[in-house]
Length: 337
Image 1 (cartoon, helix red, strand yellow):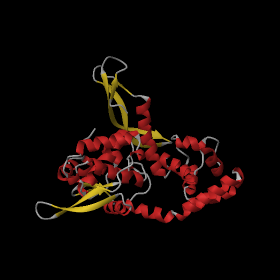
Image 2: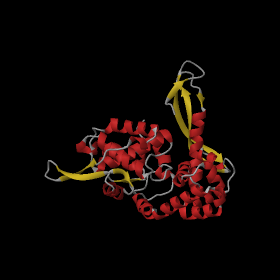
Image 3: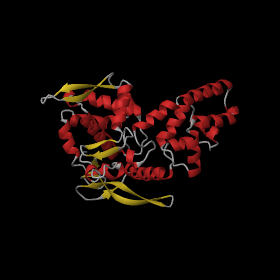
Image 4: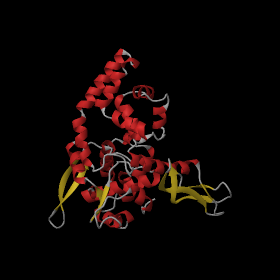
């Protein structure tokens, strides 16, 4: 959303703002931040299609999380995982002609269809559905799909291992309504290492940079980038499974750690990116957020960034009990724009 625009009622400038509001959806109440513009000259307040969509997205996110309904990204990823067009997904699942396409565009499935989608996400179960509907495929396409499904089934061991990198595997408010995305996380870490001052690329700074990147992106775009959850500890917010995360990235040869001697004769662990990063994995809005973060903090020391994170309400409210920090509750309070 634009931070400001010309006021449609006068010659002033209207600035984006928000306030908490209760919104009804499918006979349930949800509290969201309602976005609107307010003119600095005539003081008129108004919404646009974009701000209304952003408000409703928060409602849909909460409803999906509450009722375990797959999110748009999960629905798209499932179809792409199976290599099928939306028309074939409709036929295999027994849905209406445009149902799957509409779900990918943001329509919220019913509870019954949501259950079907959750079952279909498992390649073992989806293969059973394909076997029952084999007549909708040509012979070559059918055999190719079965081979693809067998490969996916054999890869489940690695997927189980990846789930240990964060406590949460399904989109909820504690991970910015996005399931953990390991490719984006790996490339984000490598990008931040590449752009920041080498001497400051230690564990503390990387943890804080990840937090600020994800929470700023949620503040402006209503989703995190990595899908990681963050815990408030003594030294500021950190990814909830940061040790597992960094170990995984090192094992997969995205990063490597070395030790540098400090002025007191001790050692500091510094991370370097092994093979650079791939900017194509990020959307335009994600890359804009990342750029804002590294431009602001690339020469900031770990301790300075730690001190700044201690001013964030999300840390202040949760550090006593080391709670996870809720994106929906605290991202809009972030002291960054």
